[in-house]
Length: 317
Image (cartoon, rainbow, N blue to C red; front, side, top):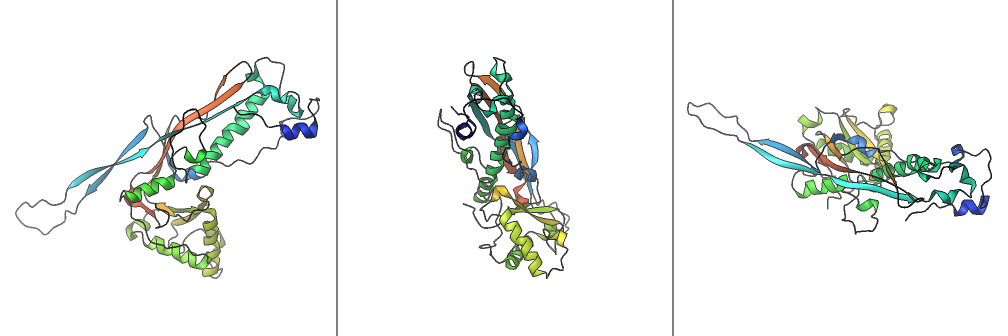
């Protein structure tokens, strides 16, 4: 069972409630993160727990003319599934714990604790926002581990993040990494590595599509510094996140990738499959006064067509 931690509050303000002017405006909640990493993906609602994509292949058909019919080519179909993982948030509180404290204004005379202002504040301003932040923190780096019955799991083991998806694509031979070697700490040299990475993408792909190269915030900042250094400040300052020779390609940093040297981009849509994508929270009671709240949905990250997905040669195992 969870609990409301008000130990420091009771020590400072006393174990009693004195009606005054206090309100939720006096409660400075943490600055939660939004689901920033998910913005890279196209959300695909589904009723299934696996999205079954199919990759169409073909062989060359062009040949010199002759009167005889000489078939060449061939068409094939390859499965490209995207697995979804069921994730959840469970928590509970005893609202009575705050009644004899500075936070007493979040209680009221209703015997039904579900109706107390505390419960709505807890769900809307804390629990659900923390759930979204946890998802963003783990959307790239989480690796699924089956839960132990009756024991709360950890965010890092709740699902397979996109890094694990990339590793599976590489291991399965669905995408071939572009060699960058160790990423250089010198900004201008690092810019050169990113430019070489893009040059490793087939020309007919890199010139036709608007693409985003995803990396950590630290690396994206290194890239911007390198652009200023390498191009002697003559490059437009508002375009420091774009490659000078490939203005259709943008570099963007993501907090979810913190600490990683992985970079990737795609001309094929990145897919976020979701089953039951809702912001609803179920409220219930374990007993008359213990309020429980829970929410859950299924989610899974993937690439529509890995033939047009590109990543570097680091952290692929």
